[in-house]
Length: 253
Image (cartoon, rainbow, N blue to C red; front, side, top):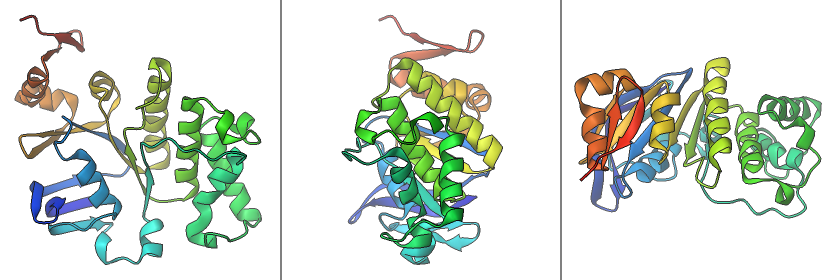
């Protein structure tokens, strides 16, 4: 579980989001929505421990994330970033094996138990048949699953993802989000991801965090629709949400 206590995030002295007090529960996939520049990436980087908060705390199961050592942090939070990974000649199982580095050291050798964990992670995302393929031969969707398997092999209670569907076609996007949702439920991990695919987030997430006007609103799609928060967010994007059909519609001007 992640608990944010009066958290303010930003760069230097410039605050982007202020005084956030929210909780991310285990066993849920939560999507972070907001316009470009709203502060989504800054928040994710702070939750990952890549940058310190300007104020407040991030607690991981009651421990202050930013007081943990890098080794302790790497056993608490794993991160899958947007950037394409270019690793010629590296096999999928070797990439996933890098997720074991918090336990073996970066150049550590994998023992029998490590290899079993790697094989299990590869199987969990459905790419066992690709284990001996090199990463550069994979499709974008397959590569994203390999990176997710690496995060699973890291065996952290929390997985953060920055725009995991950014380079994927429609079917791969749906497949990836359904996989993340299933993994959150089956493994009881906290899975928190930023998304631009609003309609998919609305339909496939356990809960939403909506960043708008420097504030964060949280809840299920139903509760945020009931409060009018989702409607205000979408109408700012020139879209409305049809509660009956559970679909997005472009507003005619």
